[in-house]
Image 1 (cartoon, rainbow, N blue to C red):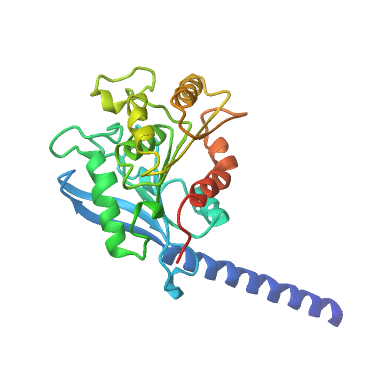
Image 2 (image 1 turned 180 degrees about the horizontal axis):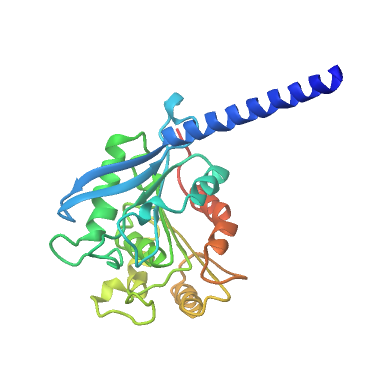
Length: 279
């Protein structure tokens, strides 16, 4: 009987230690997972961005590359708080700061990450104000070789179009199950916008600046994605015709989080490979 009691006591001690370690890890992660709020001139009001710092950030003096990750649309003002799985995916890819900006508001649920006029200039916020804020508040590599812009679904469109508009600001651009011209909330109808809102119309500019501003372009889609598979296949062909280096993949799966989770670390590694490492 005493031996059994000792075993039970040992088991209890192990469980308590495991729970304490898990709690400690949760506290450490929470201290690195920040909700930043600041006033945006472009959006004429307060905006948020979720900033997740890499392990060891607080004790390191290094500067880190930044991955700006755009969520899907339509969305509400709190959607930037989601996609928790990205934290683990990025930690598996390498040390970097993860920034997930607010991409919509209650009265503006599908702005497509574009500029629409006073108080609705989402591109100016995401591609301009946000990097300036992050660079001024965190230890970042403050140059294009320290920034990637990535997104999924409508965020994939946003990442591609903002990245191509601002080649001097981002060295890596990835679209995960995205599209390449602005659409309505259904994703089925292209919106009438200026020519430069369609990525294909920017390829000559990308090619012309290839030597001065080498940029990694990557895109993938699920083979069961009825809305956006064909658009991705077409854009891959357009990139090939323009002789622009890029990486393209079609995976088994649909337009779903399970697809993005399955390939998140791989594609984040690809992006980070084309950025400067922490220094």
